[in-house]
Image: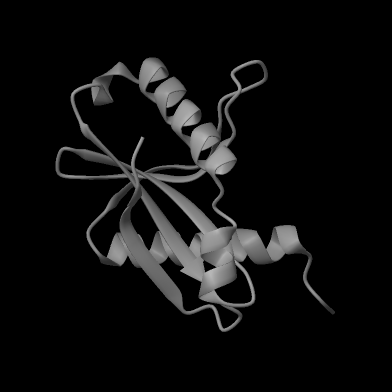
Length: 120
């Protein structure tokens, strides 16, 4: 039975979370949604390491190039808005450095972690 895109994406997010935990990141939230009216979207993973708050976008496509291309300007803007909303709701992180990472997968589910994948 073939998995849906949602199931495949959720599986990729779980692998990404596991990978980051093994790298010493502390998980904070998975699939964070800010709510209607914010102009923001979902953040796949939110983690911290030392005094850095990391917002991670996970993409799985046929290859790494199409995975990277799936993180569009619109997508980055929505994640940034969601990150701002998260920090407003969780002021204990307001003095943390902020970083946006990407974890890209191709069909074989081997992750490719890009630290500081984009900046605002």
